Image (tube, rainbow, N blue to C red; front, side, top):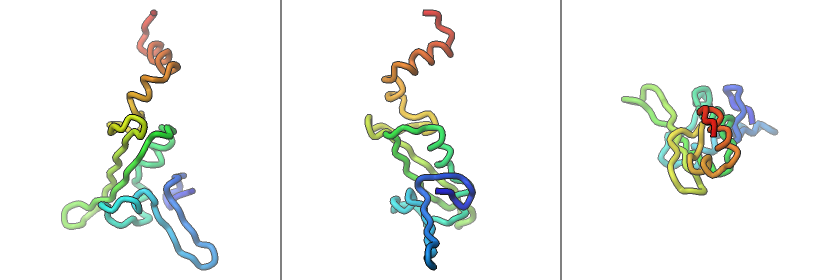
Length: 118
């Protein structure tokens, strides 16, 4: 669904049908340690870019909203993990290194980029 910032995100939901006024981010809604979501948070959210770069079905994202000193400014923190290998992922744009190592086609592509003539 299209977010208030104009990008597509599968975790954003809105319903304005027949007088309803519902907007929510379901990633933040699932996280009890996060501050409340606001529509302005979608403008600086990295999740749509991560979902565009990495379409792995084993990628699990956790999003939380935090405030700076004395509630001035808000920032978003994304944590990623692999459901298959149960490990945290450092860069969610790239994905799980163990999942990437198990794919045969990626190994050929990686060797071509490194310049190996094996």
